[in-house]
Length: 385
Length: 55
Figure (cartoon, chains in turn yellow, red):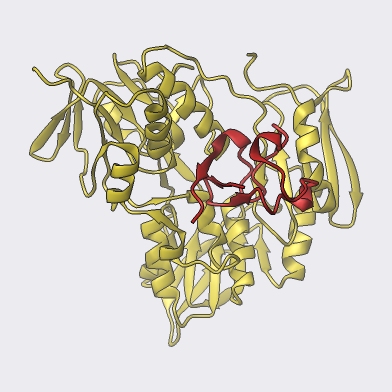
């Protein structure tokens, strides 16, 4: 081929667009093609749970259309293009009956929502919100409704609960655990968030699950395992994400929870990379913005010719529950230590301390949330630099 | 005076206004904003802001 095969990035979420932006800072010459199954509109996924609070609908949250992005970044963007296979020998991406040659390939196609199997005839009223197109459909169906049942009390469930209350909706949250965000927060911090969300009017049904959703005269009836029946106009499912690995596995790439990459974001196939919600980076799946941006910067350097390993610093996570500002930096899995809790109502400062007194993680709520930056400086980075 | 925009969430830092909530006085130039300052909306660092033109 006389023409240089392009860098092909699959996905135009935060990972795909951030990588393209970072790469263009270093190299203006190598052609870059972004392929996406959806409309290619640029938006920030973390902002999907802030639409009512910030008074923005799907159009308001959209940042730029693909034509604008293509011009800004000096790249080609192919929306509505579904990848059906990867041939790592021929260095080709299959798009149905067409194919696209790549010089280097980057998988940034994100994660799928986990869908629970529910009984009933009202499942068309159950929504998962994982991208801007989902959000658009949700807002459209919501028009005229008032009552929302949220399945899941993780980060996304709690953020949506707060945002929808701010939008004036009645909100019920149903979750199997007895505390909010159990994988993220120590119990006293979770209790603080719950207390403030309840003060805002959110109703929690914890320690139980939704068993069926059936059409009712108005909206749906949501039946819970504990015997309760809730009336709602629609149901939001926020029970978790699973990195998309199927196509990668079919192409022979090594996968585990995500697509396995090392700290240089290299998969097991030559010149194929992965980052963002689909990637398992050196054993870690972190579905947050900060790790993703760190990966985008490192991979941009690698693609520009200087092989670079990502170095994760401290990665605090902000929980966007404005009724109870919360920041958390979970201690490393299996870390030796214990939580030390200071609590004043819904203001909680929880430090995870090693035997030697070193801060290995923290969770802060309420007025203590302002200390997050100072605390983040005390916590050792995930990767030694 | 310039404006800077967070590429993640779209928040705008206006040098003319500063960010008094975090002790950054009006008129503080972007290069004088502390390196550890983070986007108040989404928590990304200074390096994820881009300069945007003002009208």
